[in-house]
Picture 1 (cartoon, rainbow, N blue to C red):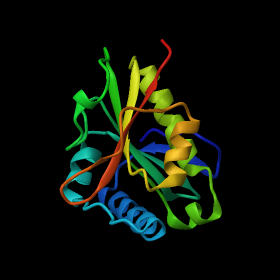
Picture 2 (picture 1 turned 45 degrees about the horizontal axis):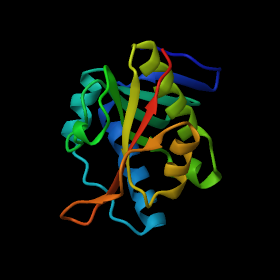
Picture 3 (picture 1 turned 90 degrees about the horizontal axis):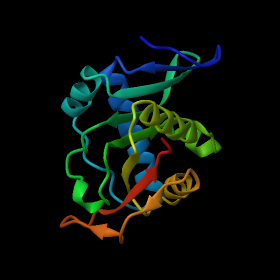
Picture 4 (picture 1 turned 180 degrees about the horizontal axis):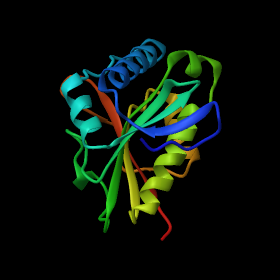
Amino acid sequence: MTRTGGADWAWEDGQEAAELHELLVLCDAYQAERSGTAAPARRVETTRALVSRGLVHVLRHGGRAVASFTLSGSPPSGLDPDAFPAARDPVYLSRLAVLPELLAEGSFAGVRCVRKAIRLAADAGADVLRAEANPDLADTRTMLLGLGFEQQGPVHADETGRRYVHLQKFLRQ
């Protein structure tokens, strides 16, 4: 277990798939209610696989998982890497989740997650950090744009009506 941070706040590598899946589903439900969009379908098997590969990073406060994200050298299922400009060594940010009560309070836990993802990607030698986001989650999209991500192309919609945008941040080498 890798832990960094202050006494009350600590980063660690994800270990408890059930706990992290619950955090993700709670966040999705909260965001869906706020935006009037459908929550994504999440599979606990996917969460287990990502945790077992050491790709999930968790922010704890007082021992409780309050935020998490997945960082991988492979695009998440369904994300087309050809939707982005060519890159030497891209890394993908996905499954960003923050406890609903922290989102309601205006916490910076999501910002902390994205900043941590940027540092980890840069430290791994990536030249870009990529993500897909729901454009109807205005706060999330604004946060990503504020942290240097740029939208790549138009807003897309799939056959179910799910809307998404591709975002990318160039990392300095």
